[in-house]
Image 1 (cartoon, rainbow, N blue to C red):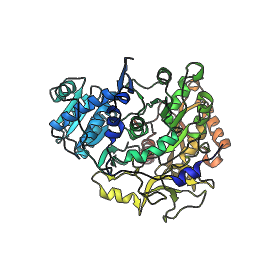
Image 2: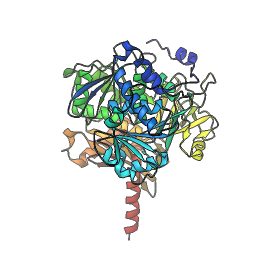
Image 3: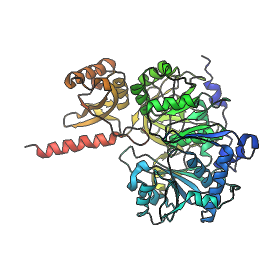
Image 4: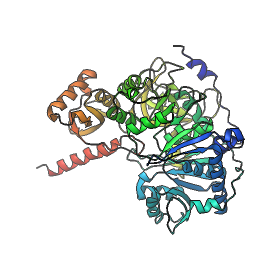
Length: 558
């Protein structure tokens, strides 16, 4: 293929205007034009299959009414407005309304539960929350522990503590001029998912973060948009992945996005993609694993229009890539980023070679390297920490990097060495310039003197047909420090297999595919793994389980 990477990367330059507002570029500029305003912005299906189409004009009118309501409620620029809703058009309208009045949007999900919601609402100091019926009960429980949260706008349910969405909007005009905001004004307060044992942190982003996100989005989606492109992702729009990797960039380009609040299943996902002729999608590896299990040969059952798939959140692995190529006819583009710096490294197989298993290369506009413990660039093939610079190769500030952790300057400073942001992810760069992920710093461990990358072993096990999902963690051991243990979820067809023989088979599979020192000494078969709401394996839960078991064993030892 024609490798265009060097030219694309070396010539890219950021253009960040001094005045910039996400709502203006994602919604109002389209709705202000009568022709553009009639185009579909959101195709929505609820959990019962009821369908509705929202045009850009309808979305803008709803957003404008809500923005006027927020102003009447006393919301000022810089106030934090929490939005706790499922994937639906009103969620997009709520975001745009808050952006329009200069507020900071705090996207939250009911999957946190009352305690998790309460902790984040208190930390953010949110005075106003916008919530739908699915999330309302948990938010009302959380409100008791959030003295600053005095006003709640509720959609689709009644409660004495809320202002009904319909009543509020019915009294407001449908026109509103967004307040002018600087591009570096705070716009989003995103909370980390808590997949490690550290407390979730509030990550503050400016309006310009959308600009910083666009090169990676465009490249990983095979140069989105083409004229008939339609986007869909099962990732919640309250997460950085669904928001910055789906909703906002799709609306920025004036294209339609599909939304549903139905529970994810592989058959329903394929039905949606067929019905709305979805061309581009963002998927977590966990979603692809379910597709593999639940739908055999999807192109024989569904007429798909897919031309681009971005995959991120966990190591993708050669098995998932091969399945996408064979079953969907598309090479997925793996992308790497974090809540603090999204879409900084990845693949774009239509523009440069994608090496299966690698993270890819830095997307245009981002300066990324691997540093050793002395903060020096590592030679090719040497493992270090993946780091992102505040500035690109042209010396311009990278707008994808976060402004800082909310109310925690010490934590912000701790994540930087000079101009380098430390991701906490270990990896290396090969001689061709491709990045390879070894694992989170807290997930990688030593066993008998050897550095163990859980992701490498997990990817190997996933290539065996018996394995539907897997997590590898250290099991404390007095002589070795730790040995390798795997938690395996079996594919349905293998759940009746004799476990001892299957454990030996899987151990031999790793021994042959990798090495003897990478082979799990112990395998536990389980019905499910602890998974975060973003689809990531919560390995720290399993590590704590092993540490607790060792402590209990030591206590009861005679």
